[in-house]
Image 1 (cartoon, each protein chain N blue to C red):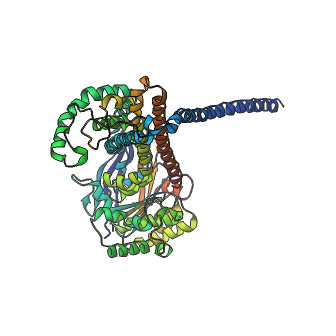
Image 2 (cartoon, one colour):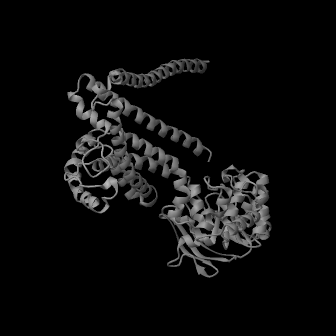
Image 3 (cartoon, chains in turn brown, blue):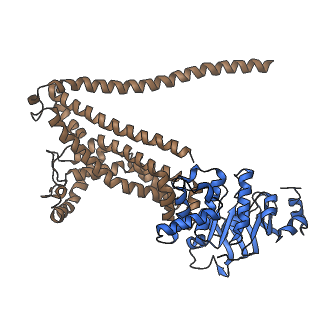
Length: 311
Length: 259
């Protein structure tokens, strides 16, 4: 008899605990959504005057679109440079850690790469502008001299090295841990069964990786790159410190170009009135771009989960 | 095509742990040899040393000699990749490459070992290998569909087709039917009897009826207890092992008194 009573009691307590906990977690979930909606609403409300203002009152005098598109292009260029550098390196480092390095080396290397993510972006910016920029100047000079016929390398190269290319390199280092950590996680999950199938057919280690690991991990690599892209698009401090900004130029070796995030950070403290509204409108555009990029990344991850469940 | 294997004083270690102790045996060409014994007796480990697949497991190493028609697989300068292309393997669970079509699965090993293969040669090889694995009639209309869409038994026969496509000297099978239903098992057993016309087949099995049905010779492995190394207790013609074993342990095992 007594056992039934205690069971009932604990079941009742469990029920109350259950509803409390589900309420708490629901509240937390709703709060996040509310914050997201509030941010979007705030951006839109504050940006509204810019969209309504006459074209000649907006910075540049040709309307908001003419103001924002060079910034969008600059943002995309910096992010693309970062991805072009970080994706191959990140994937190779992840492969080294998961399939080549002996365990006693793999762990420390993975740890150090993860530490890169813990360094504040302002420190990357300071390092980029004082150390990296000046040390890249000779390379930029050489590129301009030998490949100057390609528009993106046309001279004269910047003498300070504070160019969009330097900013891209700094961003690449910052997003490297994202790509490496996510790719590594997925490489490790490749079914042993498939790896052994390849090896038993007489595959070398690289052939085994090409036959089993990379096809298995492809969606994961793509989504890691998309998440890294989201980070690169929104990064502010490093770009603001490294890049000597200016109007949109095709050459990556000259000072010029600007990203949305850095534009906002550099101008915000002194902005008021319509200028403030403009910057917030720029922020809204950036918000939409990163939102879309992250949604695409999430969609790919979801599809990948369904796929991996099949086998 | 098919070659004999001679094992001389083979010890297998996982780190410091001796897993398989001093095995010597000869495996005839064009025959089926079955390894039986209780779980953990080292028969799968021993099977893997025959094509150096045990080296995939960190810390695993083998001492002794494995001779393939007189050539030592553990000799200096012998590349395990080459060994594995001569000695194929079929695993416990069917493992076709999920991102490849049926056709590409069959050709996977061939594309590794020889550089290029013409379209018509590839078509011939796919047909011959799938026919060799008794799978051709079931899949000939959907060669471009993924291999993971087949049933378990079909997938296992696809893996056998993939293994014979590279024309190995020996085919090792590690409990190839343990994940399959009885009808698929029967199909694989029929196939094994056909494969021995051309190949040396070595099969590990937990199923003693299977060993007695398909094999010409049977090796019985046992361990003295957990943590002790696996040993080869008795090796002889299958009929003798099952009807008239010399060792008491073998008799106890095949009559179902333990294990």
